[in-house]
Image (cartoon, rainbow, N blue to C red; front, side):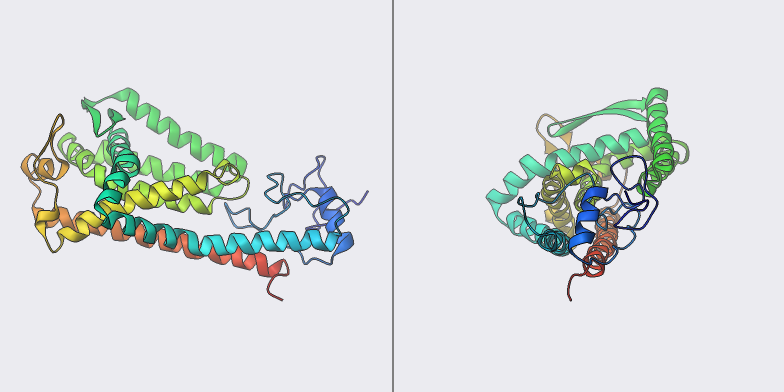
Amino acid sequence: MPETCAWCGALRGPGPKCPACGAVYAKAEALRAGAAAPRPPAAAAGDELAAPLSAAEPLAPPLPGAPAAARFDGVLDALRLEWLLRLGAVPAALAIAALVHRSPLGHLLQRTFLSMMVHEAGHAVTSWLCGFAAFPGPWVTYTAGSRGLPVVLLVAAAGVSLVVAGRRAGRASWTWAGAVLLSLQLAGTLLASARTAQALIVFGGDGGALVLGALLMASFFSGRDTQVYRGQLRWGFLVIGASSFVDAFATWWAALADSDAIPLGEIEGVGLSDPSKLMQVHGWGIHAMVHRYVGLGFACLAGLAVTWAVATAAARRAWREAGGGR
């Protein structure tokens, strides 16, 4: 038995998989025996694309008796497909969501079954970050009238747990997520007054639809070893995220030129709409409110564009360095 991994050259571990690159030893040796495959690139933080022979086993098993070279071609095909999916999925989802939004019936279905729940989740998440208990429901989020210590402690525990788990598992994305969560909670509970926090909670409806929508779309670039990838959840998250983002952003983009596009007034069974609350209860000006939503939308698009560019480049590099495009 070889003492090193046939795929990356690292010393063999006690298990069936290489701890350095994630390759299954037996399959890596079969590939090396049948095709002179170049060594794959080192995987970037949070990106398992460069380890195509991981235990996640995203590729279909080869037919019995298939030559190793054909099996290696299958790996290259999978790497190329992932690159093309990363290249086109998010832009296509945004374009389709925008087309659906233009249809009155499509917009109604989009808001009722996709964006509404993300909007209410935005209210709830903002409440939790500001120390208020909240429960999101259909078309309304029930929020406590004052801050509560249990909520603060639970959110802080979640942030610390993410940081600790990320460091132990070598997952930089978990560590950063925990650090961001703790930073947002610090700003929401210690730096924001109760009145400012309540205004942020109201703003967090469409604001959350923008931020959470962008995060859901970015989850499409999750690594092969995640349940989001293996369970095909990334496709559902992509559709929900694109619909939520487009539904919220289109409203405020239109409001730049036409203030009648702003949903002012009362909602039956709920009370004042979010824009009306921001203006009548919290004293926000219409110009400032519109520009804050639009500015947040562009900031989310910029972050998503950077994520898309980095993830797509990593996928293309993995395919080329594994022997593709030659």
